[in-house]
Image (cartoon, rainbow, N blue to C red):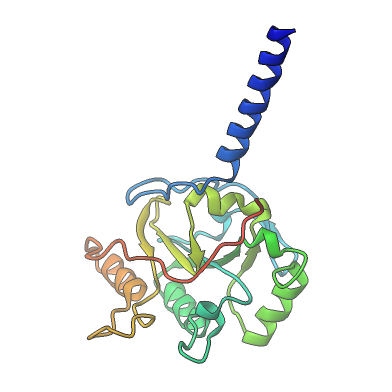
Length: 211
């Protein structure tokens, strides 16, 4: 009886440990790392089902974890919202032969504000010109270690990480100058230079994972 009780207790403890690992935030990939899950198919708002590797262009790919409702994305009374920069950044990326995609990993809100239908509506309302993908069960966000909406990951031609963090520093009301982190990284990469500021702090709303 004691052995049976110990076995049950051990199984429960192991189950709890596995669950803890399943919901624990993943450590972000690091500069120089190869991007994970690049061949995993994801549904887009256009009905296609493609992998990140299929959105990559000659010189690489920019992945932005985003959503439909976060004030850092859509704007608030105190901050203009980064999605207003998406189309311009995507256009510049295209000129530099870089792919540009948005990924929605808010699985906990998938039946509400971040459903596929709501993503389609939001993209149409905002005039998005880039692919907008559903990250089912937040698997891509977990693999990348994405923390916020938005959170940027810039991959080079070999799909290795060369920049991650914020789009720019306009969220910082105490800033003394504007720093366009992502655009600067694109310009330096185009010029064949090493990215001078390859990491910046991500700012935004937390990604709504299912717990």
